[in-house]
Length: 241
Figure (cartoon, rainbow, N blue to C red):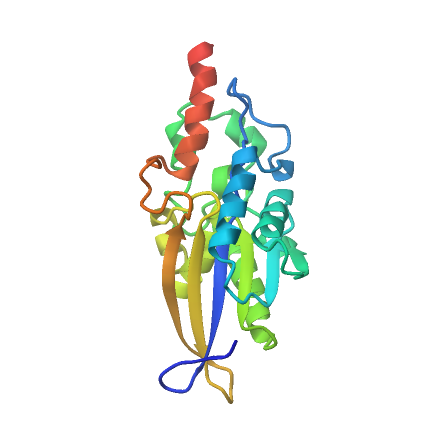
């Protein structure tokens, strides 16, 4: 589906998803052994199926995901029946903290608001990945995808932190807006970018929709931020100790 902007630019679109619901913490407040390997919960699979039904008329012609299982599973459910190949890329895996650092956290507020200093040069996510380095990795991979002219409508399924970086790219704000954005599970964001039809230079980028959840459109049942939810589950263990 070719789209043309008012000035004749070629307009292409990215549907940017966060994976569906997972559980990094069990009912007793214990962390899972390998957060990278967690599958979707039953609710996460339902979220993805509902999202796929809501977007069934969208003419996706390419699908890229993080290489983590939860992103690939989400993509398969959203795109079920379309016959699209799903391309997992390591460039879009989530920010990773240092497990030893997390175990030493005394105040759960430090976990709940781990993103608050993402804009500060040299800052790392919970003692692990550098925000700046991951931002460079993600935006570089995104621009490589954009440089491939064959697609018009991309489904990109990634993670809360990675999505914030893609949105920062679209807004031109980089890491300065990272902590101010939230991404609920299985949300969708819509980004348009317009290219010069001859030089393919990007003329403009537009964020058309942000953190839309088809299962809870007005966030009626969703008051905690993503990291606050994880901290709340860990608090169960603290209370029981």
